[in-house]
Length: 274
Length: 249
Image (cartoon, rainbow over all chains, first blue to last red):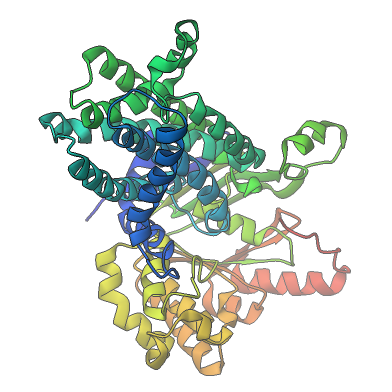
């Protein structure tokens, strides 16, 4: 006979990591369905369908190329590749954060009616974001081929970079979506802040155009390191340095810890707020 | 060992949910009191038993089932369940009008925590039970309310569980479908599952349940033999004028 599952609920209970993890593993079918729905419903009614995932980064690059190659000139070499290889992970980050917060409140009715592991919504958002990100690398590779940018072995490091990015993003998404159940305002605040944050991160401009005395502010921005880790293997064709990687891993783990602690403390009390 | 143990379970809802920072900041001054949905409820339901929960609207019956499911956290006391719990409380959660009936079977099944293998295995049984085989590949938005309810009930009750929680769902569909539903409940009972049944329908409670609890204003009034508790509840209804129903959350 298989072990009988025993559940215990009491006042002031905090979500236990092992319980949440076990529930997530048991909800594999739901996770798959949520990701599948995210990926298919998004483009269901559009003519180009999933092709938009490919077209969107191309169009964005075209616009920014016109603005920055002709209006401002940055000496970075292959500006289009520099731009896109930083913009794609940035878009993943900001989209996942925004969508995770929305998904958690959209699914409030669901959490109110059935018992589902509550971290499954930011998790499924991050996974479908990752799938979209992987697809949107294809147009970048096409641009690289056309512009004669060499494909270097360092690009094989990309999966490690993307893991750091994904863990970092999921941790923050978990924290923000948890808090947004209590305060919906957090969503609007983040929407405003994320635009500012984008200009404070060297994505559309290189770090070296920033005056030396202001660079320390850029270096205080965690997103600088996260984006750099993902961009370097493609644009510079080198593996990130050990110190950069160390910072990236530390940031990702800190973010995950913040996310989990916030979730652990607040998720049990969701019910009246859903 | 009991299947479900409630030890002094209480559920208080905060005065009002604070949806914005502004309201949260101002909340402290309103002086509103929390709502006591359940107060000091103690029960033990034994394995294989059919247990009825009766009471008026807003008495806390549904809240109690939700605590047992693990959706509503108790704000006092402790609750323990032993075995796989299958809530048949809310039907059709996550139904999507754009998806076909068949796709909804799988999505709803996954929401209820069933594995893909199990859902594949049960697909035909669910379609057969719901009696809407000819429309199963049409989008759900083309279904009538009755058809949706039957599909939802078929999915929810096609389950292998140790503890089945039923909330007022007997009232779906026509007489023939009702018959099939009652048959299903009897089958759960025969396979040795513990059943917790919340109902306004005292006849069902008397027929199906061995024991019952009468809950009023979030407190247990009596626990005992189902027929006796149902009788006491009926006498109580006639004796005291019904208290004004308190809207639940």
